[in-house]
Length: 115
Length: 113
Image (cartoon, rainbow over all chains, first blue to last red; front, side, top):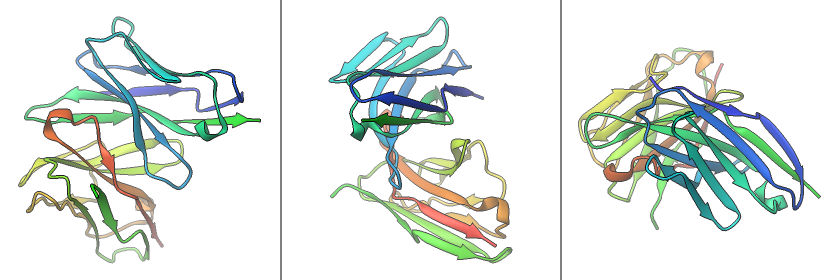
């Protein structure tokens, strides 16, 4: 099955700086890579995603890049703000028989944005 | 309001006492899934369902059962809970064409003594 590794496990940045979280996946057949943000005590929520036919996607201050050859993808947050403090999870979706896909998550990165 | 609901939100029980955590979604999603979240381990999939009466094991199915008799409901059953099943559980749903965009429920914090 798929295996997703995520680094770093914790990340502290100063407000206004950039943050980068990196993930690698094992199965080259994975074709969908979402990122979820989980604020303290809340449920995970999708913030951005990328499909295997795209190398980069941007949405305001967040962007995701995908390198299929190296089997890694990254989340970039620019101009970080205190409200970006949360746990971020990457995931990889392995095509499965039928109409749905199976999602495997990384272990999470706790991002702390300090003033 | 489109949402995924779980009940109960908090549960403390004892080893061996059967319990069920309910999950319901009102978005007509085909795909539903259960995850457990443990510190340092992230979100691990327990079971998932691609549609009514279609379920399959995720990465950590041991000790759990599920059923999908109706499209909107996907209960998680622990026949004989053990302390290593103490965890935060999330139910999620998505439409069949875009299974990666999962909508999560609020979570159920389970403690097994």
